[in-house]
Amino acid sequence: MLQAKEGLALINGTPVLTAYAACSLLDLAKLMDAADVAAAMSAEVLLATTSAFDAELVALRPHPGAVASALNLRAALSGSAIVESHRDCPRVQDAYSIRCTPQVHGASRDAARYAGSVISVELASVTDNPLMLPDGSFQSGGNFHGQPVAFAADHLCLAASELGAISERRTERLLNPDLSGLPAFLAARPGLDSGLMIAQYTSAALASENKILCHPASVDSIPVSGAQEDHVSMGAVSARKAMDVVTNARYIVATELYCAFRAYAMLDRQGRGAGTGAAFDAISAVASTDAGERRFDGEIAAVGGLIASGEFSRILSDCGGVACRSVLPE
Image (cartoon, rainbow, N blue to C red; front, side):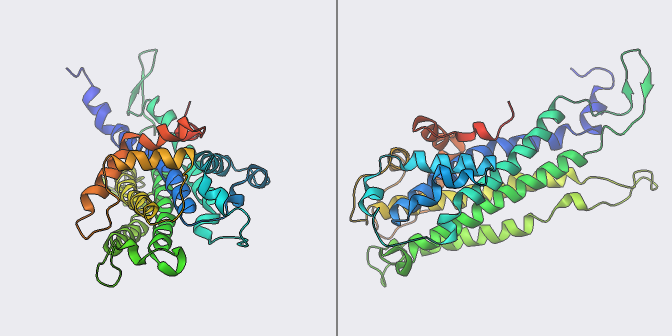
């Protein structure tokens, strides 16, 4: 039962937009771990050069997120016989979507960490107005203004969108026979079957939608209440958008995970890494490597469910990665 003034406190300050932003942050943390695992699986199945993930190299530009992401990639690929099978190949460097994974994923981790620091302060704050102070007096102020959370939520949009954008590009590499050396669209009968072509259509559409949703609502304002409330944060819009962008990006990363999972069945090499092997086994519980024509949306959605459950965070922790501990506030 609400007591005097408590109803006003719930709707007058930032509880709603802070709750939305906090939920988005938690979902994004699990998504970032899944994106690292997805990138490791794609790198492994595409026979990519993994030297770009070396600790010594990344330490020369030691952004915390990049260091964490590179560690996750190394942990997921540790013990991979597939990686070892082509270690002395003449390839010097891979496309940006593979080679620059630590830097891109890491930037998303750092943006999320900033957002988390803001959200954690906000969750422990008083944002009502006017406020009753300990001495019993009332004072009117601006603690209700949502600008800090609005900025944080817009950062979450950017972080999630770029995870999806680079993931979709890796999916392209998995499905393009000129880039993967595998059957076109991972189809059983290329030219007769469409394989996973339409799955990439969906990823591309969601990546494009996210770019639109990433326009920062926090730069907008419109005066109301006789111009007394003449600058507002639009933080609720930012926070709602963040949830949408994270949801879209989850499906994009789930599609990459599913495509990499399917690609393993067409690879003429065996011996997955500690993390990539565990991820393959987890996906096997909800999807099939059968390349025959069928609907794939249910299987991809099931992989998305694994992401949302934190399964890939657990996999990273088990194989020596840092998982979402590098993002969430202490």
